[in-house]
Length: 168
Length: 168
DNA sequence: TTGTCTGCAAACACTTTGCACTTTT
DNA sequence: AAAAGTGCAAAGTGTTTGCAGACAA
Image (tube, rainbow over all chains, first blue to last red):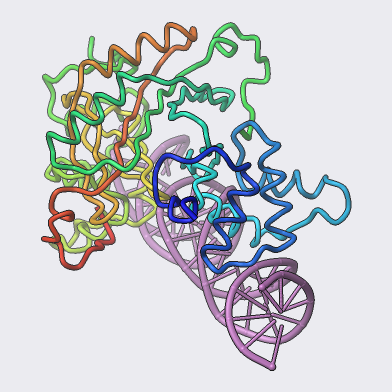
């Protein structure tokens, strides 16, 4: 019961598995627990990298028979998972990229423009800056997002010969 | 002459007006100085807020006769101005937003999700964090971008009754 | 004159939506 | 049975592009 009212909070209760938490979320919203939604959460939970709707869709297509959901459903469900606090959404160029947010600490990204790799890091200092600046402007911060763009070690050393990947 | 070879540098020579600098840029690239490009740089230079291609296009449409350029030309020219170091481009949601970069100091943004306002601030500390993190990962930073998302003072106090503007 | 630029409309990449049908409750 | 979800294809959104005619150099 405490959990049900917990969904609006930024920081989460990690007693439940992502799947369980998503079901809770659906229930408390009067939404239905469908095959597609289950398949999607489960699949996403196994995925530890950043991904976008298209990659998820492709992955589902490669999965054993049955484990399928349409493009529309994938998009819809990703949105719900963001609402449920399971995923965090990030606009990279023109597409939306997702990463786990449930039980994961806040972190920032280094984005390599050559191979599109994302490297994570975190910084307590940054949080302090954020709160100080927000207070100064009477601004209520909900989230923040630092991306440092540049060229990663691999690409600098020329290790990545092909020089340009298309996806995360 | 020194100026001509200076375009690849991050920090710029502020001896020239934006217009002059753009003409230099065009010349050194073998590009032509057209009416449209002139109208656009001039118009953008008068504009001190953040804007996107659509807003610029609309503004141009409202301008005295003649001062017109097509949508395609506006998009193309904005890209050139970014290359020339006059503008900085930022992806906000799904559209690209521009701001002056010529002679302006690096700064970050508070983004109000209610009225879409952008508030600027800067932080030397952040630059230090960025360089430290980049060094740690042997990453060569080219730029960075911190956006703190939340609700601004005006919207919190309910001053903005309509609660949702569509544009910057 | 020569090659770049412009404007138009069509193409794009990704996401969202309307609707008839299917499923959950 | 009622309400919500799904899949499909069609519509959006903002940006980019191909091409014929216009215009700087």
